[in-house]
Image 1 (cartoon, rainbow, N blue to C red):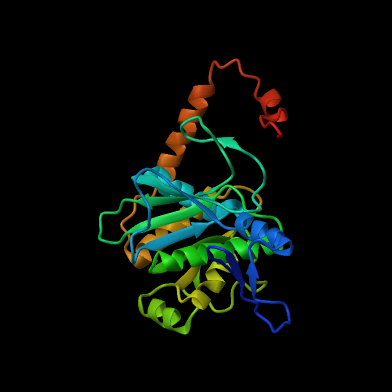
Image 2: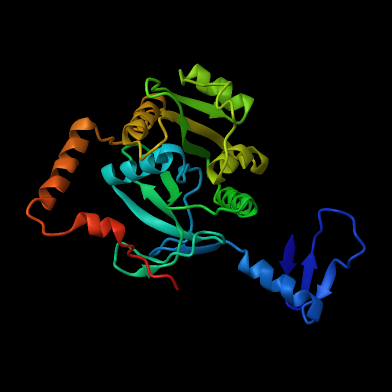
Length: 290
């Protein structure tokens, strides 16, 4: 752990060593450590007048994964409910691809936090990104940075969304808790809680956030929906959201199959009469490497 004062760098080592713990910032042998500390810090870009999250709020978290179930669930949630972006997180380790945002501005890789408007008194946020770091140490660091931020923001509860690869016939949604207290409470509420899944464990930033949350004094649960896992499984995502709504009474707008069919028809209608060569378009990358 590193702390800065006006002219001194205080280094707190998690083990005993003979290296001095208080170093002058002018020492040449500490300049590199200072630079690394600043680079590895999670940058926060607040949108508009927002400068903090509301206390005692709930947050849904998801990153791309099996069947893209969790990320797709948050995308569908945002598309069907009033929301606004409040924060962008800029961690180290995301793929170095700058993309155009909704306003047509070039934005660095980031993780978005949205506030979702609900009919009840519960304040709800979502946290998701298009990608996550590939290196294990960067995933672990990002999970801890996010949890530190959520703890400082006094978030009440974390729900992490994920998919579980299984046979096409299985269409199950269940919750895995991270504390005995949460497990008992959810069982009393009639939530489908499993203690034997996922048998092979879980990996990635989402899994680390869910499992590490109690270490930071936060309540967390992982909501899992089965999927064939080979493509973007929208139906599995909708089943996850519907079950969450039924169990916890969030009163969120969730699209049904009819709405999805209307969206598909609208997209197909837009393509009728188009002279665009879609095969060529799929073969051409629209990304500039810098």
